[in-house]
Image 1 (cartoon, rainbow, N blue to C red):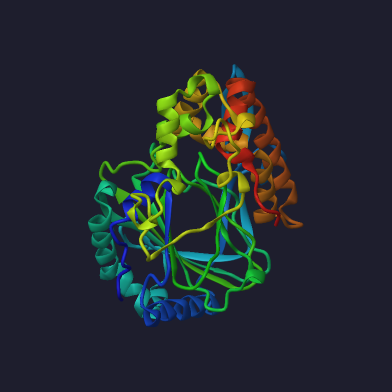
Image 2 (tube, one colour):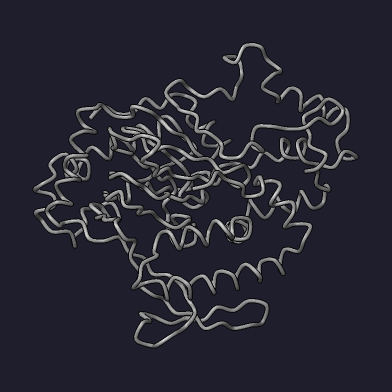
Length: 403
């Protein structure tokens, strides 16, 4: 297994953008072998359907696997947990908590020599390479490895964060796509929602490694219309720096109301502008050649209108106090998740229906969405209209390309 060449630009990219994508990450012989082993595991029936427990409003007791309550603003809502499955998506965890998954059948490892070696030894080499390229991550171990097969009949996941800092040490998610025959018609992109920033779609091309923060990057693996193979890694940390790091100065210069932007600010903004240097290679934000740049799904991410000759949109300006509050929200773990659910409420609901919708699960899905919309209304009450508008501006209004 040839390790990826991450380059010195890996951490600056993760820190500023929240994600990085490395093309031709591993040698083709190794990645092709992994793909074949995943296909063999699926053909042998060793990859069960992918399932989740979703929160929903109560119905018949027989449909509930567990019960709980949720309290907000003095109101208590009854909540049940329901096991639902993603049609056409199959997966198996080969490693959990840094060791072989004891619940996986022995023949799974016997049939997948390359994957077994990754679990037993090669994964530690990848850990070392990542720590060398991005020391602020402070990765402590490879915690989990999962392989996944999507039959290509529209299977997908709902929008989600992989974990929270309160319940897991997982810090870095790495997703390796293994799809040599992928084309635009295949779809199956992963949508990354950096907060702040516009949504970004990354195509699941063969041997492409996508990396992002496990507890800060909202993402949506979208419907695939051609068989798709994925290998996912999760790395734990020992006090690593969360990312992306919100650049408050840049956001203030871009969005603060005109009365807050003084001459010195405008000069600084011009210095930050890509056009400030005629030689891209001299820019400190330039990505390494091995790191691909995904395409933003919103023109708002790359275009600005003029304010006194400086790239600030007068229609998107935000008062200093509200902008400060919005940046504080996006820097706070739980409030960030609430902001994500609010800004992307419609997209979130669509992703749930697409991921779990089927004749046998439609009732559970709709009950989960009743709870979703109740939560959205509570968040609206908590945040208020000025903060809500600011969050929409910072996240490009949640706009994205159509399915």
